[in-house]
Length: 75
Image (cartoon, rainbow, N blue to C red; front, top):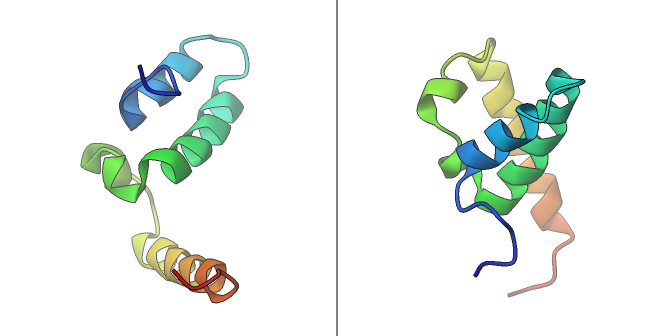
């Protein structure tokens, strides 16, 4: 059994949102953490294509990834 209860990004986020209560915040936090765990490629294309301002998001992601690897120890 994997160290986390869900195998896929989508089922992780949906399980968290289906808990109810403050679903937008829960989905946002869970989606961010699940994205780190599963990777960007695991986010359903149908979900990503609905996000506005794709060009700006791509630029931010590129900047973030670049900065996060600058201080990383050599592999």
